[in-house]
Image 1 (cartoon, one colour):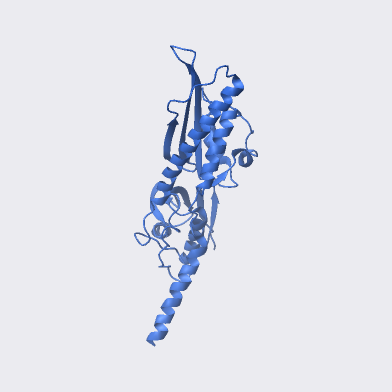
Image 2: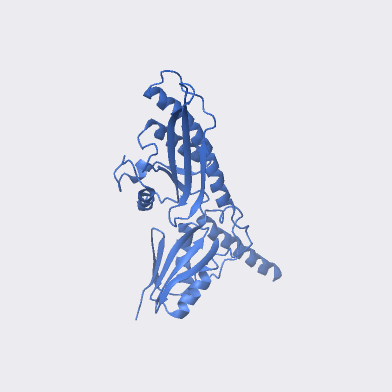
Length: 313
């Protein structure tokens, strides 16, 4: 009898782990690199700009991030090749892209000039490349950095525009490599600061009749994603049902925190912070309804989940 009981417990644990595995969180976010050239920075389309954006994207790609080309993913929602764009436009474009869903935007600026010596005809180029990381969904700043060339070599005598572009472009590319490594390290640290498995609520909701899954999420995998936030809207449920939903959602894997934004009658809206990806959260919300025995629909768009009750007679 004891052996049968232990076998049943082991089988339940194995089944619970198998349930959680397919919905493991994506640990590397989707990134797009975009240049802000609204004021006196080097404009889009310039040879220096192209070398910097290529270097930033390649370095991020080699660090294991999913880097997408801005023109390729945004050409269906905005006019490609626009110059002198403000950061507000860049963020709006990144949020408008639905396929693929973008998590982080790297915004950079390039400032380049040439300074003639006060005592001779020696001309030295000056280059500065600055960048920052933004969470596309929430607008949260994830880090910033600035690189500046130290004592750049002077330009050769008779250096024309072609020569200037090549010399400054080569220096800007080197600075872009330093910048992308610095921003990559900041993003690595931001993602790697997840709590260790077993140090908090790391349970998923199981299908109705199966009980709650008590297997901890694998360390560094299921809860190793980038912290992000979603808006969860609940419509048509009773106060008791919404209370149970809050308790369930606080027990989801990779849960960080939540706070009510507004509530009235059968409607409530929450700001929900988690290290889980949208696929896992969507799965858990659907399983939550099954476990509660409530008829409802879960829809997702942008960063908003809507849970609407299906009323029956």
